[in-house]
Image 1: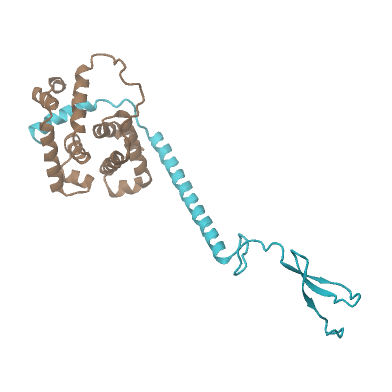
Image 2 (image 1 turned 60 degrees about the vertical axis):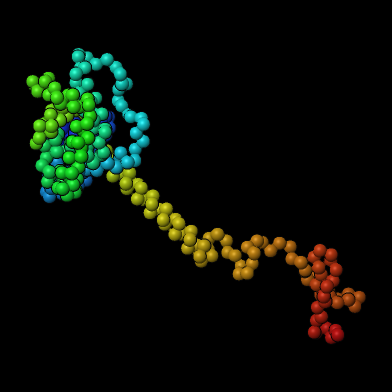
Length: 167
Length: 119
């Protein structure tokens, strides 16, 4: 499946933004692809596979976050081990972004990730989430308003995160 | 895209970083096959369960299978009869066929033969 080889990194990164956890993100991507697999030929003929997989991912995550017991998180490696190199800045950004995203509802997070990270248009986001464009607009504006109040994220945005910009 | 959205995008890109593991097509294919097998087994089990339940219900309805129960009976075995019939050759002028109570052995009735001219 060529699509998996080409898109798996992007899918995992998007899944991380939705879940905030790499193990869950990997599981989410696999589940979304497994669910799409039996209909793949039809998806390829009738739809944009990327949009379809995105939709499955967002819906699956919405279902998981309703059902799953989330007090304990599965992880492949023991946390709090020493990481090679100086990753303090990246870790601090990661933590700030994760905590800011966690303050949003699942819907707001999905809209934000699709609109900002994936750079989809409002109409495309509406297509993925199967809702009206107006709903996307209002959800996005609510999400941004909430993020604007996040002090750590605000600080990072004010600094413009020079390191990332310089890349 | 607004200034804030642009900043957010940069931050999200940095935060998402690089996935620690790769998801390959083989894993997906294997999981899809396992999922299909599980679904097939689950539907077979459901069919078997429904079939079994149907058989039990129809057996109960027709009175087959679990032992037939006589109409109006209690469903328990009849047990020892309360009376029995004792029959033998006539001797000493006694009536040969009598009905006795099982518990006491007392004669509760006599059966007279119409061919022996008995009264």
